[in-house]
Image (tube, rainbow, N blue to C red; front, top):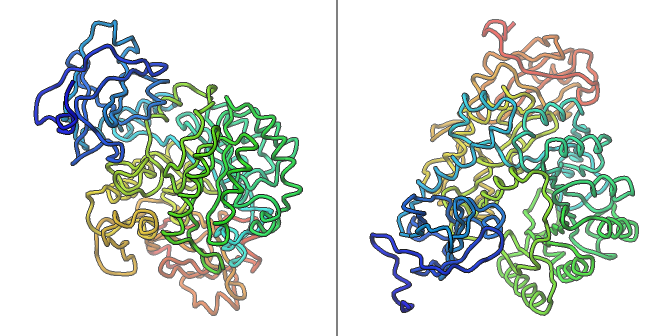
Length: 601
């Protein structure tokens, strides 16, 4: 037996053979004694290198995989933590009896691992009827998104201080509406064949959508897992029946339970909500549908955490994922500081330590308690489930070495996740909904965005070794909040002037719909354009009718209207042709690229 001192020194060169017998760990997973220690807190990487496994001399690159995925998928997946290596044979045979030699060295570097990791995911394109088209556009290099959030509605029956979406809508007067069913079906045809998980987490509550039954049917037809986030007040018998047919997860946004819920979730009544929640929790099959609670932690709700976990334990909830409140404008809620969050984590650890069947508990993605083993056994599509299991990174900024951190990118969302807005527009994540990068309403439109220069610029800027300003302005504040050390003082690109780094650009887009329209003064409305979109050469249309005159004085737009408009910086100031309310007249307003002289007519 090697001494612990020798175990702690990774080899400079040469392979070390793993000696059987190997311990069975369930499914396809086996455990070998490692020849050196790889501390769990290192995230599996030290100085940019990690353990590499060989099977009969063939180098395997699927390192740092979740143990549950190794058990269920196998196929050469492996992981090294502390003194043990979890691994699987490439054909899922028994390594004790298959006659093969398993060796390890310390030669796997981050770029090699990342390239192999992304390449292993490109096989998802083959599930799409237009796989050849996507591969020709760039799919041999860039895998499809595994996760998408489909914004179904901006309507909600509650008004909560933590909700920036509803506050913004209330303050700006932006029209509340549902996503059109035809557009939903177009997005489903475009993305659902390759997406493993469809999240329904709107600016409002997705269960309010009048066609929610059809939406769930589309998810099931394409064998996608569902992830529904809802405020917990809408569990009618019909909704319960629909959800219990699904495969996936339901997350309940409960920041408190009991009478305290009524206080922090304005408009909600716990006495009315709890019976529906209890019926749903009793009815669902834990093998097919897991249920979690997603509490937002403010200074006001710090003291409610233990009541939430106790309620969750009593009602057989699988997971409780606490996350800190991110301050929003015009809200009196306050974010807890680092000391308060650390104290909360310790209280939760002590509580979980006294329970034998506590739910899994996390705080900002970091584990507090492992909880009971996952009960999920029934999945919408085993093939998609295996692909999804290969992506272990949290879709949010993380410091290197943190649990669920991507070792190469500060944030992995632009590689594996896509946000879909009410008009089918694509955004990089939920915190960048105001910066559309394209549309997912057809394979052609989606390919143009997903493989295009803007997505490539965002992905490159989020590498941990990247320098220079961030082309997506939203990234600066998000990284500062969740992974401040990884920001390293990098600012966002200044689109108002000055040079600096890669920039978003939309010069090749033939048209741009105005999605979020606000009322200004008189007949005037305002729509904001994404940074980097030059208005030169565009003309504004109302349905198929060109408006004008363009370049109007703003006071004339406000007081005379009649279709006058002005393209000013990132804003479009405009009026409807008949001076009606452009938010509610049922017409579409679109910037269309025309010849430069036509744009000025």
